[in-house]
Image (cartoon, rainbow, N blue to C red):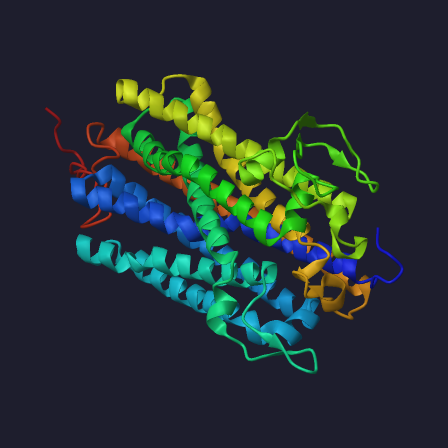
Length: 479
């Protein structure tokens, strides 16, 4: 609940920001990681003279362009919201951490140009020249992630400034403001998560096709390459995630306490799987595992874990916010663990038989893995943002101090409009992708009927398109 001193516009501003952020994050894995997967498939095609891989790369590049166009729209909305909804933060701290948003903006422009060149290059450039011109695409995508993660990690561990007599930052050190203590852990955790998510989502599309009986090499290769990337990275992400959790334990102990439902500072702290925290610090529900939280935090039951009660109530998340952060964190960990098990299943079958698993349950799980990965990414951001409350800049500025003075009813109306617009935008995106998929399927089936021995393997994005054999003249004899 909002206290009497809380501005009435705070809740609608939060809801508007949360909705647009959650919507935008759905597209982020494809903007960051799909160029990498596309170029990996493209390289395989050229290296092995593989027409199927080349066809997949070309089609993935078309999907990449469509989702990038929508991502630019949703990302631009978020950029405007920082200034419109949180002018207190941008007006006071923009000189310190604004460089991150500048880097992201330049990365967006660069990536859009590179995508245009890459799309234009199909059937117009020599194969290796075209591939080499696409190589900067992943770098531009990673540069955009660099910018936004630099800004967010600064909000979690602000550095690189001193406060003047007026309370405003002076003596800004951009290097320290960008490379804050949380930047490295957050950045690599984010990048690996994007690659895993994109890999599982793309593979999931072909897993569905496999379950529907499409067992050709096109679907096999479309599944194997992205799923292998995601499967290799899933165990690595488990270790990277453990590292960032330990960084939060050391750098943001109150956020860690919220994510783990720790009320009193103590040793031998238990771990709760789910459960709910109450205002008095008690926890009900969930599964309690004695001493595990201290062991995970410092590899020893004697590790002291800071509790929420170590700071005043006005300096920590509420019990409800702590429960939300905890549930999001646990859900992310559970999904990550299940994805690791799926990756191990895949690795075991490949090691034993050098082939894909034959179980339909494996492909059912693979089809669900993409959606689960997106949910895990959403939960990661919820943990990061809700666990930091009530600070918009950790221990420096409160969210209530940064919020706009715009009337609450206007913000609620804006939220309603944005929801309607986003439903239309994402509906159009899904319609376009489904139409593209249907058109490709019809083209492959038609080509298979015309050239059964070749379809779709002989369809290459370089050189002239294959043409049907000319029809015999009217009245010609057919011996």
